[in-house]
Amino acid sequence: MTSDASGRDPKSETGGGRLDWRLLPWTSPDDKPCFLSPAEGQGRLSRYADAVEAAQMDIGAEVLADAEKLLADPKARCDHLRIALQQTAKSLGDVLRVAESRGGRLPAPDPEEACQP
Image 1: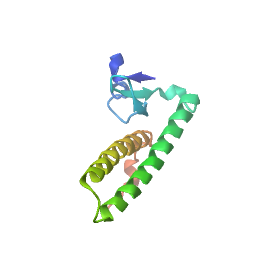
Image 2 (image 1 turned 90 degrees about the horizontal axis):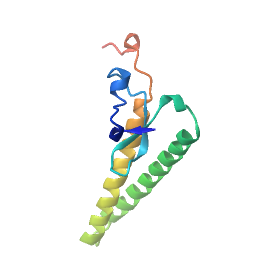
Image 3 (image 1 turned 180 degrees about the vertical axis):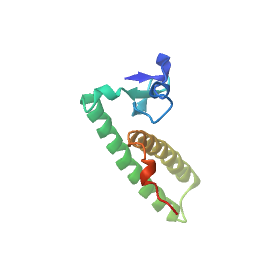
């Protein structure tokens, strides 16, 4: 595992192409992204990252459902709405990190298979 703080940029190590290093669903203590080497494959840390991502997605769905209920309540107080918005923003950040990580591990599209108008 490496982070930007190590001085290495995993994206540049792939020749500027697709992200070969796995973006992990957490950051370093100084809030830098953490990456897992592709050599780690499906090891223990990779499986743990999968579990953390799944939990983040579940939490995101719960937070969204709670926020939708609160928004539908005409008696909702501003302080409750503010807390819901903070939780929603946090969950959205987590879900976007999961999407970036998973998207970075997809194979590059084959130009031959591109849709032609």
